[in-house]
Image (cartoon, rainbow, N blue to C red; front, side, top):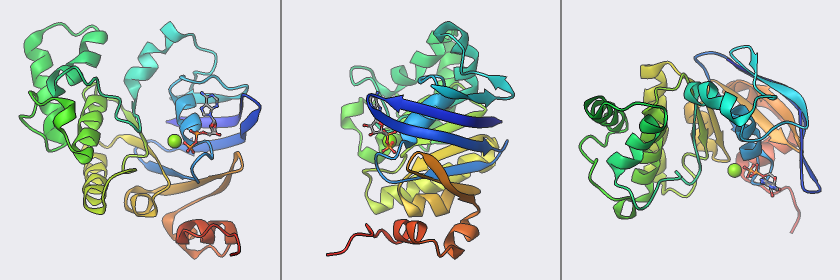
Length: 245
Ligand SMILES: Nc1ncnc2c1ncn2[C@@H]1O[C@H](COP(=O)(O)OP(=O)(O)O)[C@@H](O)[C@H]1O
Ligand SMILES: [Mg+2]
């Protein structure tokens, strides 16, 4: 569904991505792990054309999106939905209005249809009937759910999650992990989950890629990763910096 070939990206003076090769199989979930600042969000943004590669290509359903202009990206953005780390909700709009926004943007006008689609998306994240709430009155976990509902409302074939559980307490984290799993089963969508949280990684992954120093340092199954004795991977999994005292 998504294929990244030889992707290079420099931002400012920093070479963030130095030749990324990656395949996201249709219907599966690829978790991209990596330390904070390793370039996970930059990589995700390339998958929806928010960044253009310096070199290399990004294919979505076989179509190279790396050269596309902003106005040519519309169909791609419908196919590939992204849940930003912050949730990126409009604070001045109610939950229902936040969800209706992308539908109107894409040309849906029928208020009844919009209402139905908004209700459907809220139901999928266990927030049925919460259209009237304002974002400021939501807990961190609920904000993430509303952000996710706003991604789902356009019915994307592929969902990208940027740090879906970062900043949440362990119980809210567990609940989002389970929600992602349920959605994968129900929608059979292709997913990419970017995280530095091992619980989220192990809970949601079919395959795991580990981003390190601008490259995919490891790619394999959860079992492959758990079995690895590579010190870089072991330190990351066990939350050790690898530095001495
Ligand atoms: N728009 C930008 N302009 C300049 N540098 C950026 C930009 N976005 C990210 N970076 C830099 O790229 C590196 C990787 O960032 P990011 O992908 O956000 O890391 P991660 O998501 O893995 O925590 C960081 O050093 C960050 O400062
Ligand atoms: Mg990030």
